[in-house]
Image (cartoon, rainbow, N blue to C red; front, side):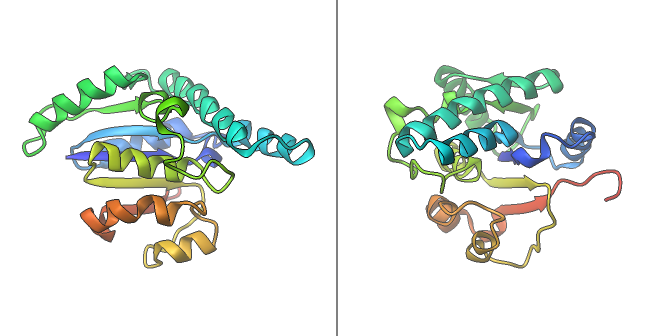
Amino acid sequence: MRRIIKIGGSLLCRPTLVADLRRYLNDQPPAHSLLIVGGGQMVDAVRELDGLRPLPSADVHWMCVDLLHATFQMCRCWLAELDAIDCRNDLSQWLERTDDARNTCPDPRTSCISPRAFYRREDDSGKLPETWATTTDSIAALLAEKTRADELVLLKSCDVDSKVDVDQMTESEIVDAAFPRAIERWISDRGRDALQVMRLPDDHG
C-alpha cells in the first residue's frame, strides 16, 4: 500500500514536532509512505513581500515550491532514519519497487520527498493554479494522483472535524482553495475515506 503524508507548514514551529511525528508514524499500519513538508513561515514571508511588492503570480508560486526543498532538507536532518527522494529518478525507482510489493507490503518504509522529484516548472506548469490558491495541500494531492497512492493524509496543527466534506474544509481554510479540484479525480478513484485530514497528535492527544 502507498500512503502520502503531508506535514502542514504550521507544524514546523511546534517544539515537539519530531517526537510527535515519529510517534504518529510508528502507530500507522504498514505502508510505503512518502512524507512531504509544507513551507511554513518561509512561505509566509514570501506572501508578505508579495503583498508589498507584487510579482507575477506564477513566478511567486514557483519560488515557494523551491522553498519546499529547504523544508524537505530540514526533515531529512530531523528524521535521519528515513529514506530521501529528491529527484525524478529516485521517485521512478520507488514506484517500481513499491509496485511489485503493493499487496504484501514487505519492508514498508517512509521516505521524505522533495517537490523536485515530481513537480517542476519545466514539466508541470499548469497542472495546479500558479497562485496563492495552491499550497502544499494541493501539491500533496497531485503527488497522490501521480503515484496512484491508496491513502492521502494531511497533518494539521488545528483540530479537524472528520465528518466535514472537502468543500467545507476549503471554506474553513483548513485546506487551500485549489484542493477540491486537485483532489477530485483521485477521490473519484479511491473514495472519500482514503483522504484523512487531521490534527497531528501530541503528548496531550
